[in-house]
Image 1 (tube, one colour):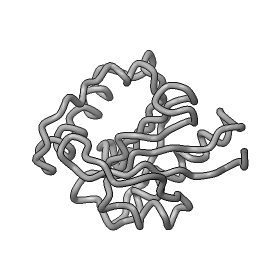
Image 2 (cartoon, rainbow, N blue to C red; image 1 turned 180 degrees about the horizontal axis):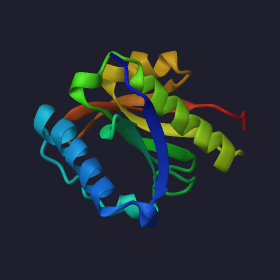
Image 3 (spheres, rainbow, N blue to C red; image 1 turned 180 degrees about the vertical axis):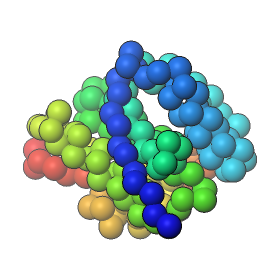
Image 4 (tube, rainbow, N blue to C red; image 1 turned 135 degrees about the vertical axis):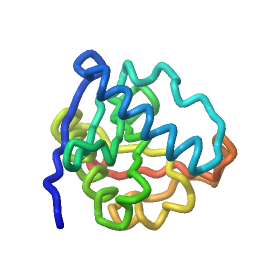
Length: 154
């Protein structure tokens, strides 16, 4: 049985209390509990982000946040890309990342895209056109690497 999915964009002011609770719960389940990584997820950066929520039959199954250029990096950036454990392998990670890239193309048309990718996912992002930049570094106890998607040549 398949269910309709829905992608919804919000800025911080337009997120409902229920949606915010769903977002924080999903991020906690994956980034803190599943990955056994104790870090400060509530970093006050959500106030500066554009939030993409992926719902499947009224259940939040995916999320990403997008920052304008100059907030996290000189370029626009995508972070906290997350898919619910039981929904992985269905293409939702690609869907939410592609939608985030399209949002950046539309809203920040002169910007490339930066991410701090978990190193284990480097091939996933390479398949989407991202290129590694620099060396692998430790972030919150997990190997990461900066990756760039060039939408515009500088």
